[in-house]
Image 1 (cartoon, rainbow, N blue to C red):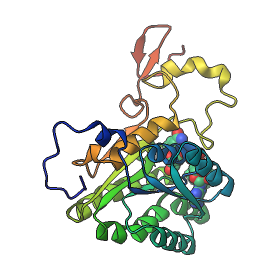
Image 2 (tube, rainbow, N blue to C red):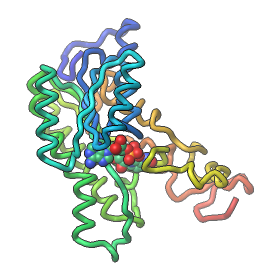
Image 3 (spheres, helix red, strand yellow):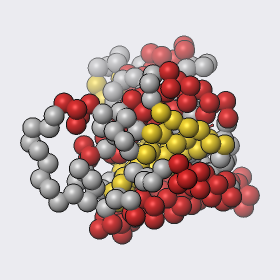
Image 4 (cartoon, rainbow, N blue to C red):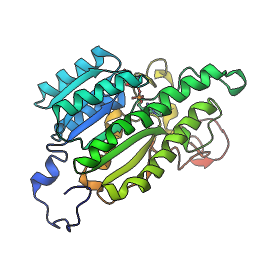
Length: 288
Ligand SMILES: NC(=O)c1ccc[n+]([C@@H]2O[C@H](COP(=O)([O-])OP(=O)(O)OC[C@H]3O[C@@H](n4cnc5c(N)ncnc54)[C@H](O)[C@@H]3O)[C@@H](O)[C@H]2O)c1
């Protein structure tokens, strides 16, 4: 079933339909070497996608490809800094030379560092946040949109953050760029729906990755998780990847223009804290 299908889906899908959700699809993953992107590359490959990774770190990219191939999947990695227009153009040419269709694009690259309170920010720091969190999403999408439309439609998944969906006092420019990704997602979905393109976003929070490392130096605070995240624990890249798989595949064939928090409930519970000691919620810090 393609994104443009007007056929009613079979109400009794075969096991093969749901076993390999991206069989024969070509899937692009930016930053697909490690962290959330790495988990997406691996999961998509397990589901039959031929994965094309755009990665700034060649070792991370090579490691992901080796793991995928060892598991019987197909992937290639390309040395790409998504902030560089020439790199993106080279990547686009390499993908289109190899494949006659492009089905899935995951814009995953982003970074909240270095953190600067707004008063201490500069035009240079604003530009850096713009480049690493928003501009490349537009650029890579622009590079692959036409090929996706021409070859039968597809699905775009944009990673942003829960910080783009709530007030984030720590780095307002970062959060604003993430909000821009979420809004771009919504707008493009409406613009491109009739061309067979679905566009959805994921607002991440609390996910253990190289960039957001909750483990190092936090071991002694493990007992804080129940009062911190509504699900009471840290999240993992694989849990982000499963939602990306849903959005990338025909499981979500009638879903477009949405931004889904994958955050263990932090957006839903924002401002409310569970106190294990008191056994109740409070909307102010009350200690353990
Ligand atoms: N981890 C979290 O809790 C969290 C929270 C909110 C939002 N996010 C968002 O989720 C996405 C993934 O985050 P992560 O924690 O997995 O990040 P990460 O830094 O751990 O991994 C990012 C991957 O992208 C690659 N990369 C970095 N810059 C690149 C560039 N310019 N060009 C190409 N590749 C590049 C890195 O080498 C790495 O493999 C980001 O957009 C991030 O802002 C993550």
